[in-house]
Structure formats: structure tokens, C-alpha cells
Length: 148
Image (cartoon, rainbow, N blue to C red; front, side):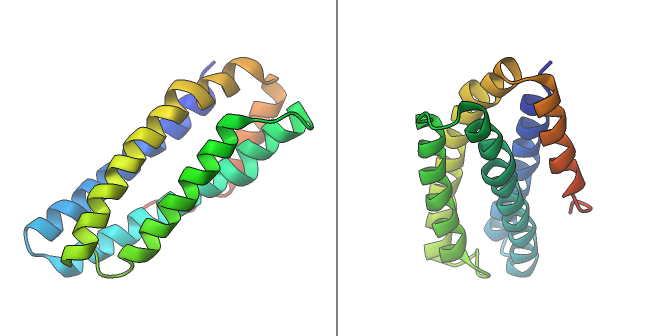
């Protein structure tokens, strides 16, 4: 089964749509709605990163004990860059500097999502015990609040 892949990649699509809407609203001059949409994107993305870092990565570390997991190291570095971009954009996504940062963020997320969807998520679904995946998915779903 591809439960981790399906759920997490589905959330990527939802987040991509929120970012695209925020960017389109900026382009049409609707800064207030763009800021609201960007905030929904920011909160959703930080929650998604939390699922990965605190639930999925933890499950992998528990499974593999002390072995290095290079893909997780790379994903964590990318998460740090994503957080920096989110903070720099802040509550003003429609100014010129933020527009450049949002373009950069979209490119970073595209590469990041591919790494997860083509490598990390399928590996989890194929390699880990079904009971561990059950526990991870239950923890993720338990943390979900109504989505914007």
C-alpha cells in the first residue's frame, strides 16, 4: 500500500494550490486576500514539515537505530531553508522582495516535493512494517485540524 505517499503527496498538492492562489492574488493586486491565503499556506506547510520531522523521521530513526539516513539530513536542510523563506515573506507576501522569495520558495518546494515523492515516501511505504505505518498515519491524522 502507498498510504504515506498518497496522504503526504496529496497534502503537497493542497499546499501547492494555496501558494498558487496567494501568488495569483498578489498578481491581481489583492494584497489582503493574498496575505490571508499565504498565512493558510504557511500554517499548513509548517504542520506538514512537523509531521515529517516529528513523526516520519522519528519512525525511520527508530527503525534504523544509529545508521546515517542521508535523505533525512538533506530534507532537514531543505526544511530549514523553507522556514527561512516563510519567515522572510512574513505577513506581506505582495511586496517586490516577497514576490521574489515566493518564486524561490515555489522552486525549492518543487524540488523538495519530488525528492520526497520519488524517494522518501515510497521507501517508507515499501520498507517499514505496516503497524509502524499505521501508528504514523494515526498520529498524523490525530494532529489534523480543519483545513483552510
